[in-house]
Amino acid sequence: MSVRAATGSDIPELSRVLADAFFDDPVMVWMWPDPERRRRGLPRLFAVEIRHHHLAGGGAELAEDGDGVVRGAAMWDPPGGWKQSTLSSLLSLPGLVRAFGSRLGVGAAVSGTVEDAHPVDPVHWYLATIGTSSAGRGGGYGKALLRSRLDRCDAEGLPAYLESSKEDNISYYERFGFDVTGEIRIPDGGPTLWAMWREPVRATP
Image (cartoon, rainbow, N blue to C red):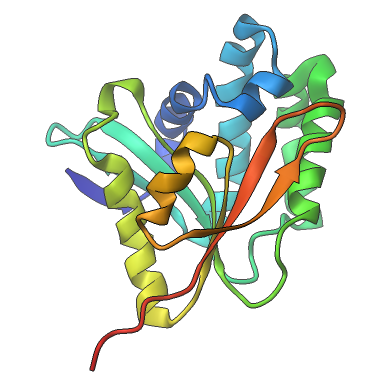
């Protein structure tokens, strides 16, 4: 397998892979209870987020198998770049309306809750999204994507932050050095996310 930076031409395939990976995610199910609406909305949501935010920060990466098929993707935001700018938010709005339809308010409430819980200091890399397609699960693509950016975090001496939307995934992230720092509860009976922080690993002299 190989990991490389994503480009604009990769957006359709990245959106498809991430939509597949997150179809049963508790937060996505909460935002789109109807499976068919979720199936249509997820790729639109990821396409908007990648195009108008993640690509610009240089942290969008994908993992391919030996045949060049995309099996996983990770969307990292660089230090100081995790929050969308006003311009990015405005550019994203039409696509978000198409993705959510009448559920736009629910999506906005989830986004606002997660954003309000985001640590401001110290500066850090933010893993906004990571996922592997159904066909790629168990193939080590998630590990390769994590290591690609975490090695850079260690080299730069910078921490990393993520939210896990599945409790079962906490132990997986812990193996890479992340620790749970708190719980984020989506209002109105929504699911819980777990905030996780990782300090950089210092090289042994």
